[in-house]
Length: 212
Image (cartoon, rainbow, N blue to C red; front, side, top):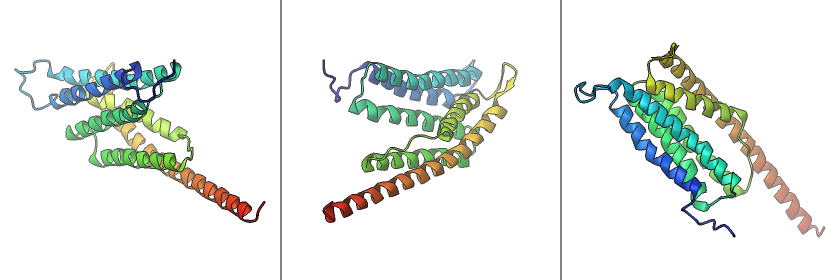
């Protein structure tokens, strides 16, 4: 049976919807971790752990829906749009809440959020220009360090003998540096690809004009 690329109701999209539903859960859990009367939330200190594990589960669904989509060859217009949006909503919401809790410096949040906006615009341009610029290892390490740092900063306490505030803060700074480096590398690679494509078009026009 031929797949409808405009289909909305399929398993990968359902998983993506689930990830989006987890975003307000993470935000609310972090919101109530501080400045809440103890009598209202007697186990308030556990909310950071709850937010952490919900964030981890939501992050893992990003791999899961992509795996299922590739395995079952389910590639739809809606899924291609919603999946990256859900990822960015999850990460940006988490970063903003961590900044509000004074666990991440505002400059780091600005760097990471603006980088996401910048890279989204660049990838849209690459799609428009029909050029393929692969993601570098630095971009992958940026994502990895960020996705490890954020859960640590959500717990923000010693856990299994580890100083999570210290490790989380160090990793989020590493992620910010890698985000700048990878964005620059991606930009230079894209400029090179665009120049090569322009040169190829000019060469083709010249051959057509010369009647070759």
